[in-house]
Amino acid sequence: MDRTRRDFLSATAAAVTLSTTLPALASSDPQTATSSAYAAPTEIKAIDIINLRELEPAAQKVIPAGGFGYISSAAGDEWTKRENEAAFKRLTIVPRYLTGYKDADRSTTLLGSKVSMPIIVSAMAGHGMAHVTAEVGSSKGTGEAGALYTAASLSTKTMEEIAVASSGPKWFQIYLPADRGQAREILIRAKTAGYRAIILTIDTVVPSNRETDRRNHFRSPLPVGNFPGESGAYAAAPIKRDLDWEDVEFIWKTTGLPVLLKGVMSPELAVTAVERGCAGVQVSNHGGRQLDDVAASITVLPRIADAVRGRATIIIDGGVRRGQDVFKALALGAHAVAVGRPILYGLALGGWLGVQAVLQHLDGEFEMTMRLAGVRTIAEISSSYVAVGPETLATI
Ligand code: FNR
Image (tube, rainbow, N blue to C red; front, side):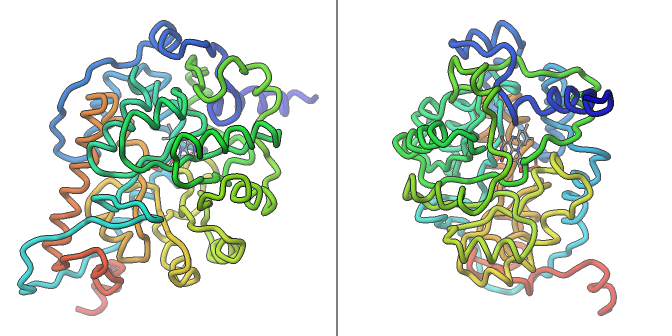
């Protein structure tokens, strides 16, 4: 192998440890491995949130540097990561007053599950990097907030531990193992544990250039709960890199559960997903962690929603930091938003109470936005409440 290729492979292997293989120090006792090899935060306490952006520098003070770099960074120049947030700011809200309304109902139903807010926790590997309670804490906090939780297949804890930690609805995200037997086994486990839908992540077919992880020489020391004692085998038989529509069919035939595709960024793919029987799509560029220089997810949402024409549930993630962002996403056709990094920052700062606080804060801002914009229910939120900045100016 030539030197450039070897260097790239070893660097990217280190950079995407959690999305490709089991970590080097996988242990049969997750708690022991978590606490002995990596000093994750331990405090469980109420946290006071002014806004979600301020959580990042606060979390940086308590999360070990390598773990913080893994969570906060993105691929390449990190343009897409920044653009995810910036694009929301190019949209303006067009409020209506004198509506006679005095409350705002945020409750909704997502693929049959009733939730108190259209805000879900996005699938993220390795919550143990943010807190010793890992996904048990984040799942509990999400349930206490009345929101929906997505468990990642590469979680620190097992899917069964995560499932019993809260009574709220949960979906399971999968990086499909290349081995069909292993894939079948994990899918059946997810169904048996009570997960109500399967999210297939489709944008991670090759490791990305996470330069911060390379710089930090970061390799996660945490276990991957769903694959106990299989570090060697799983590393040798990694996730399926040549995903196609047969894999999608395999998932719903194996589980009988609704299947969502995560990583959809074009109307064409969204339409094919609907035609192939998917129950939903998650419009996502992986928080800018996979292919840099793809568009902000909010900018592609309107065309995807137009193409889907109400035939599937649409979730969007990437840069959602304000209640106004939730409102804009719903106005442009999403049924719910998914939140990534702020959840891990809340977990780091306060355990399950921190996660609950993040969701309640975002929901509170969303309620304020609905009331100030003049809508009373989620069904009332439409594209007429949102304009693109310069167009608003052009009409003055
Ligand atoms: C992720 N994300 C992710 N997605 C996925 O499908 N499977 C996974 O295992 C992970 N792991 C993961 C780890 C960490 C630390 C982060 C920050 C993110 C991507 C995630 O679901 C989501 O797409 C983005 O995080 C959303 O962007 P924001 O909210 O972080 O800007």
